[in-house]
Image (cartoon, rainbow, N blue to C red; front, side, top):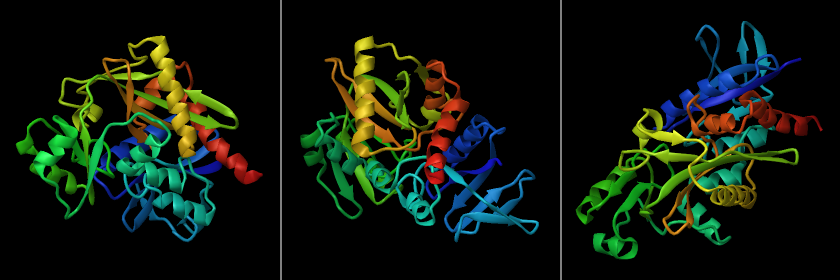
Length: 329
């Protein structure tokens, strides 16, 4: 009997539009001859499953099931593709842990750590991962502009500490732009991260581990004419994404090894993607970790899967079957 897979999308942040696009991508990637697929959309307290006729049916939060025409359907696995809260910060993972539902991505601890960029950077720094210098501000807290510049220099990136997809992110080149940039970032969350600018070649690397098998993908080089890799660059085509990246085999291997090491440090699960900047001196600095990376047809992970000569259906089956097999045991 085919297992029922819930592709869980939506969420409560500005990234909802990206999440829904990722859900469509994942729906196209998973082998429908093996699994029954459903898209479940979460929007604050409203949890619904989208059926084939676009009818939205409420999901019973007691056991993550739904009823249609008097028949109750239970899900066997949740593929989480919410970017932002509650699917990327550990909240949804905690719910699924409580009801015994296997899911696709990192658990509560790794998700909550990586969702808080400042905490994640400082945690990884203790394991000698090379990260950018940064300052964290809480809502209602302030710091003098000249003190920020003294500590981090210019330019700096001002961003929500717990957001993604470049919502609320500003590259600040002049000290007079700081207050507006900080205010913009606070519109997206309760904490703001001010991060030193790192010049160099931006690359990103995906990987996953299942059943004793580790898979690390070719790197993608990110080239944009925009000030930085912002929302338009990510999702509206204002970027060149070159896979494999135009860097040496030695540097590629070094970053792939570091990505796998970070995976283990975090106790990650499922597919993650780690972003880096390679500086002119050959030093690579870690920028960000994505524990529910974008999965649209044109997103980095599907590109890297193709470049590795792998079938995306097999990768999806790896992720799903890994946890389903644990449940059976």
